[in-house]
Image (cartoon, rainbow, N blue to C red):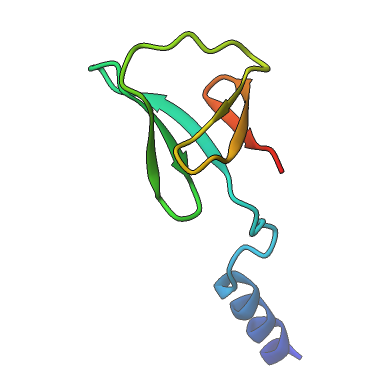
Length: 82
């Protein structure tokens, strides 16, 4: 019985987090030079949104270079619109 408890504990602690979503997570960040990037947190891909200091308000919708629409949720978070 102890063997199975130990084996179960080892398997559970060695597994990847199954609660993570495959859906892309995006966030915005701005460099000190005023360049704003859109970061896909799943792939690490960066896209330049603006090279000028923008004013983005919560709820604003914007389009990236590929034509994909995003809504700004506030606090540096965005959601991809489908």
